[in-house]
Image (cartoon, rainbow, N blue to C red; front, side, top):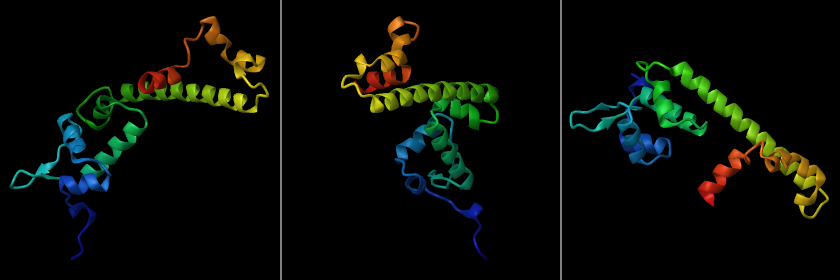
Length: 150
């Protein structure tokens, strides 16, 4: 009889390799309550198809900028607040998208600008006038980048 997908069982190493992760990442996610693999008779972790979908969900959610705590709320059926967490994440994505759009617009202007020093270009100055005036405190996306890569 042919084995169904649901009969597939992975060791921690197999599952980690499947998703190009280190095994300690899966252990960490288990410690944080995101994963709860079965154990075999020897106490080793055994992952099934549902666990693989949970790992894929964690990876996709992290890629979208969600914290592990937000993801735990998303994947834990017993936790209240899933919709609130998702709404808050959508708000954050909207904010980040607006920052990226502004950054893209500034970059596009600078690319097309004839001024050698774009800080002297009146058109570019108009794009950053709110920062100079103090009504916007820099570009948060760039400020975060500078603080982590500076």
